[in-house]
Length: 314
Ligand code: MTE
Image (cartoon, rainbow, N blue to C red; front, top):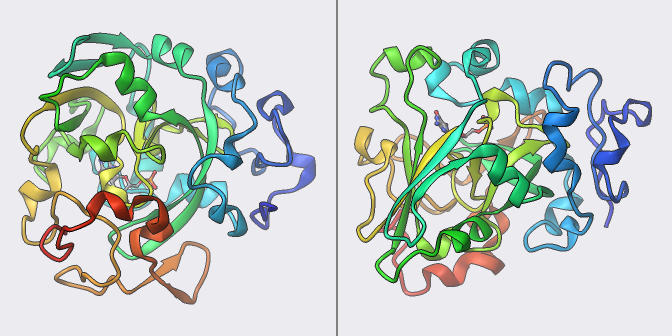
């Protein structure tokens, strides 16, 4: 199956061809889009990407859909640490320093510790995954992420049998993240997954998009992407991971418990208390399309929730 390119991407605008082991599968980048993102050597681990991403779980159906242009993916964002307007993160996130960067691992595992981002990238070559991102605000995008399975990272840490959930934490530093000076949310941003959700092959740590280093506004240097859940589960700029026995409280559950549950699976049948989830607007399009159960990944993830009342566990 062919990937249909976003309209404004031209063949002549191909970036560094070494990024693309199999150019039939990898996506060309928009004009000038990568300027200032520091591709070159800082991107070395991504250069090691293998070309079989299209055959991996979850990406096949996405390849029939048009990619959301780089420009939209990187200027229409939710990242409240840099402001609450969609255009704020692209404007403000330059204050985030993504090097040096460490991810601290705690809790129920045999290898807790502080891991340097360079070591993480060196150990886990990124590959491309084209995933839909469906925001709870009823808009969606199709994004060619660069990343690696979260399960590979977790396996190295050897969680104990007590680890039933994983909690993720974003950086807290109001100097770098000016949005944190206001109590819009309970900082730092925290999210969580059940262990089997975290280990599912669709779940990735993303470190790039469109073949480039992840822009700050998209959650540099490392973020979660869980394609069958509303976008807010996909926490950005992660500095901490904790393996825990009990279901963690997440930022959105704390701030609006009636509106946001722990599971947050994309479910057209469960409306947000203030609006419908039945349809969505693909960014760049005008007509609204029906929202798919589990964001279209039901064949791969529905079994995780067998026997659960998804209206109760929303
Ligand atoms: N992570 C942090 N730390 N802070 C945030 O405000 N917003 C979430 C999620 N991750 C958010 C976050 C929401 S609501 C969405 S829809 C996605 O990021 C948006 O990701 P994108 O801007 O890369 O499209």
